[in-house]
Image 1: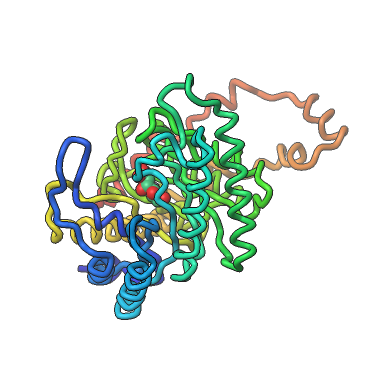
Image 2 (image 1 turned 120 degrees about the horizontal axis):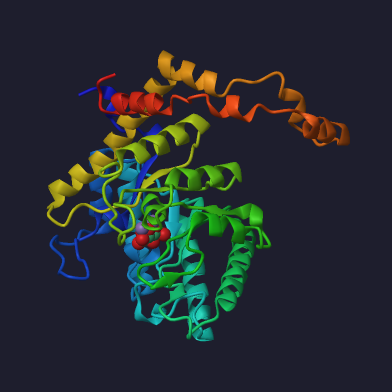
Length: 389
Ligand code: GCO
Ligand code: MN
Ligand code: MN
């Protein structure tokens, strides 16, 4: 096997404890794998070659743990990290599992629930900071509604904004240096989740007091659930300087959250996603937020984790091939070539420029009769991806 596809620390491949730790429970069936401890999962991730491990507070420390138990767990986990060399680049809060969050956390109608969610998040930030995490993710699994009779979405936005402003100040006051990354999802487990897409999150961030500290954590499956083009959402986040983290996985379009192995289903979308990240020089974690099929034992879980990283690296190689392919690049150069006659019309506005452009005569028929050769360009891409080029 080519060394090119071996994960290395510089690739920054990370997994959540909840991903390789998934026991395969789903709404229709019991767990099918025995649960493993965080320490065991760190060793599993080290064995497959991951760089980092991320966690929700309660993936590591059970919600009912005593302070003494917490300290023991933290010590054991630190030891496992030391033994394996794994890092913790990101941490997050579980604000969806406990029944108290049945109507949301920061956006619950109940002030006690909202305050509890804030307390839990500050404690989880303390925990993440203790392991050196620098990115803090917010995924609001219960922040939404089944029925709009029950809540006012303007209240939800206000409460969420207040909470984030508070946490930014908290991070500053503790010197944690966190960057916050907001993760959108259109639905599931709620009927509708607030701020359902990455684009919605980007708009919302501009309303925050510390907007500079807050970016996004787009997830492949979540944009595909909404029928959207994931790479375009990521590009917009990048353009805004807000791509603080990314959740890679896979999904059949417009279904429930399938959380499949990266590249398992949507090879072409995954290819353009990897190509984008590599082309722009994104240097954050490549986090796989996915689960092994329910058919697997822990050997299968390792196959799943290795597969995510291997596919990423294969697609990275394909992206290089695309960028070096003479025919493809010549076609792109021709398609995007400057037109000297048009150059004076672009750029900054001036009244003279506007008048000149308004007076220009365009030969619409001639322009539109030109074939763009996109069929050929796309087929070359398909040939390349299928390995015959
Ligand atoms: C999901 C989400 C979660 C989050 C995780 C970290 O659909 O369940 O993607 O896996 O990413 O809670 O914030
Ligand atoms: Mn998800
Ligand atoms: Mn996710």
